[in-house]
Image (tube, rainbow over all chains, first blue to last red; front, top):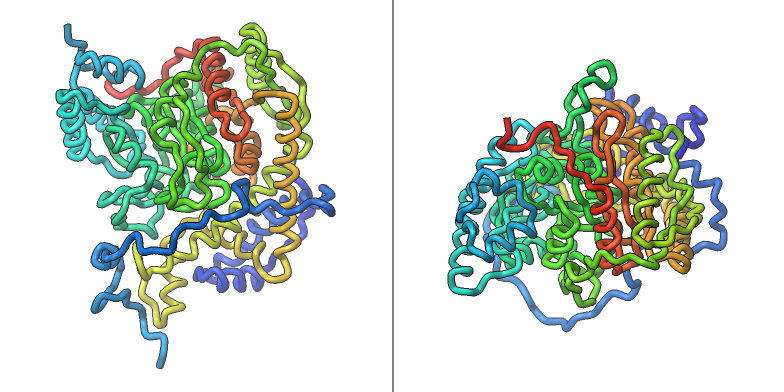
Length: 104
Length: 502
């Protein structure tokens, strides 16, 4: 359970962190980028230890559950609960979720 | 002859059940005691939301059913619910600011089953934010304090408050402090077993698919396991029977009948082959954990079990694989928190600014870290090198267990590489924190049932757990061997804080 390959090489720089944060839709301030680049690089360097394992002929495992999804009859089993669902929305209007304008 | 009310919170779930059946006290009287206990335990910060009115109403309904001769298996049993289970009309936070004010319009399958069985809800228990953590320190609602303290003479008088473990830290602290009779937890990488070990109680992670995930706020869907936290193995067996079962609303729920787990507790483990995996030794692991493990082997041998040395050669890689797979699934699951349908919203200019600012304000540091790692390992160009690689290693970890279970019926190992640490310790180093999960993560990757049983004290006087890992859907052997371990260990030590004691 060692710390793996702590090569000290930065896997991610500030630009890469900013790009990932944009993909993840998390706003980061300029001041947050550098510490996160260090932390995330440490984690990525640590998981590099997996490269010691030969997995050439090993299939990936997505789940231990049966791979075939169970099927059910295609019929309505729920519904008519719009008010209950909208009750938690920060903003709703005329029976819909309301978001800032996305089309000019 | 009526029992003293102050003594009621001393009883185990099975004792309470039997005495409620004999009408020695009412569910309402018991619930009143537990409401007083959870209020006395407030300094631990184990609960995010207390629901005393609902608890009393549920207890009275249980008493009425019993009076009519229609008592149910858990009628009148007051429990805490990890605040990751959606409860209809009751604030459900996942320990995150982003779910501020969220009152689910539905009930999780597991809690619905518990209420159908007659259980009484005391409140929603604190946890690491979105169940991401091993100390309960990442909760937006503040850290939970472990009811245990180090012996005052240890470590130059270091008597700082300790973490209860995580992520089900509030559940474990509440049960250990006798502020709840039992609790629900979830275990994605050890979040039931590690806090149970740190708090000196029982934590059972059932087989993947045994308890429905429907209505449980998702962290890493292929690894999330709901399960019970209790003070005795028998109580875990009783709780599991009411929590388990096929649920058409969870496509990974196993369509299997649920055994009467209590009947599996025969105390007879003669001839049971118990694997001892030499890989469950961390560098720097304290000697007292190694010694306790050996004592555990001896206890099981004396009970007639056959210890067998086994190899689980990919154990050392399980943790790194987990810290790719879990963040990857988390980054996908947590995409839903966008300020549109529920929880907190921070207005920005356009919709993207709203998403970004909502998520920046709503997610704490550890959740952000995992979402960013997950986003990265799933992104174009890195998917194969990280995510697929981790999934292949997961296959190898699972195959290790499959091979081992050709030879043995159960596996005995330490639950965690240390006892509880102080609040604030390890917090500056994510990887040091991740190492707490080294012994628990493999059973999550393989989806196998595992129970943590308190087996002894550390040199500092803190509880240490041993875990029994079993074959898929063989919770019965896990519980049976776990109870033999519990009986042999005679763990009757008490935490520094028990609700109602001064």
